[in-house]
Image (cartoon, rainbow over all chains, first blue to last red; front, side, top):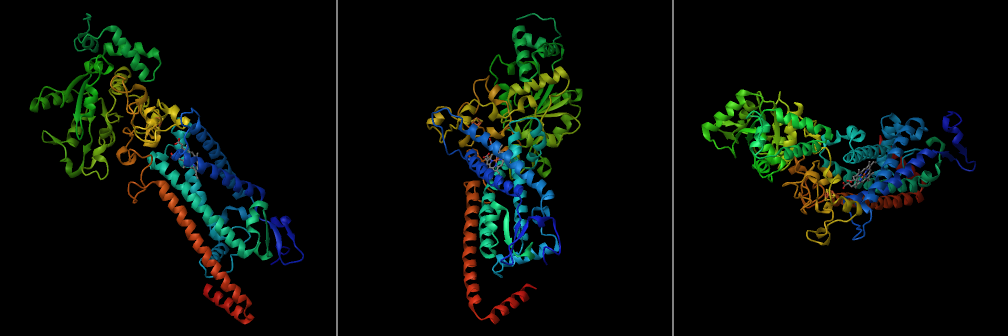
Length: 235
Length: 379
Ligand code: HEM
Ligand code: SF4
């Protein structure tokens, strides 16, 4: 299959590299990359500050500063950045290119199921051929679904905790969280998801590096530049 | 003693005969108006309502309790707001403080209930297990008594966390099947005044509201009056400035503790607890737990014994790991195991690559045979 035979909307973004069989494709559009790095930076900030809020390891001693107050203000600022990034990504899942489409995160379609099987065999050492997919392989996509579900719970528990100090809109929209879990358990969950997120980060970076070093499609650099170098049939 | 020409069963007469001056009475009305978070223009209305009204009949029931709310009710510093409420209520039945006993006491209760329109105050949780045998008075179970006494009542006030939500008797594993009163009463308005014990000033204000407006005050999602439970302890705590500054007591009796710094790291549950303790305080406004140097234990929240513990730790212990384990330890463990797991995965992959590399250098037939095998295995 060649790209000429089946024209697709992404074709303008594909350049042929004449010397090899490979094509260079703009897989990750700018919004996807911006969202990715916004989420990364805000999770780093939220986690560091969240850990401080949970276990204030710094102390202003006798100096009357505003350390905890400032930390909490930055946590709120980062939290709303984080929420904005997630909302932007959700919108992009319906308006972006096919690799950022929502169906990349749920391995339901036939070819995605087959891709999930290939990826699984690769990860459990049954095959040394990395899954062929320009975007997320089906298993990776599924882990992002889990991650976004965790983020959603984190946003909900965070907003509910925020509502404790404010009556009104937040309290009336997120108060129901406390009928599912008492306040201390909501805090507990908020902590647990932070740690699970870092567990995910380890898995995510390792797997990206692993697949990149086998597939050599420029996966690692693609999240900075957007471009991947691929055999045309992977597109 | 001031002379009043009020009927002998009126509140005003009761106050006067106890030597409460009109000035003191109006002060009380103004203070209660403030406590109820009403504009001060309501104070005269409250005063008029109290002057005109007959003393409300109160039946005070005690079930699985420690009588701590009775203590709170009685130990008001004279001549305080709590003192006045004692005078304006016709407490027809109260096991701990009534003079009558046995059949006489039961008769007094029956008479009050038969007249109807009374206020029922309940202290202690109600055991429902084993047909209610865990708490019986005069041969009747607490469930039966509650049903009989609340029939025809004007309102039910649950005092203390046990009667509001089950409290300590209902804490896991709840051997007696204890529940809070609201779960058993229907058809009569119920308001919760949780706390261990409840604060008598809030009880007075609730009753005054009821007498003045003919209705119980507005409540939150847990059935507690908003005027008393609408704000978080943490947001009105006198140590809050130390919290914001990042100044925390690290140990009991350390420098920070002696200087009155925030008790957050000592497990204070003020950030999760709604009650007006910081503003009305206890024992005539003398002090309150956090003021006295101990963190809040969250006693006015539902199921606090199960969810707010450990008392000296910030967060609940992860289930199944023992009470000394923290969520940070579990979380760091998860991250560590993940890292170790993927490191092992990386090593195995490296070994697999080495083998594949060797095969690449082998004669071409072997490679295609391997590929065929793999396709077969994949089908
Ligand atoms: C996205 C929306 C988020 C919101 C609205 C939010 C909000 C909050 C709020 C209000 C608190 C409580 C502060 C307090 O108790 O005074 C909090 C604490 C915390 N946050 Fe977040 N947060 C969010 C995301 C995150 C993320 C992504 C992480 C980490 C990955 C995180 C980690 C923490 C931690 C560890 C605490 C300490 C909780 C405690 O001990 O009570 N938060 N957050
Ligand atoms: S002592 Fe408790 S309630 Fe007071 S500021 Fe500190 S954490 Fe909040």
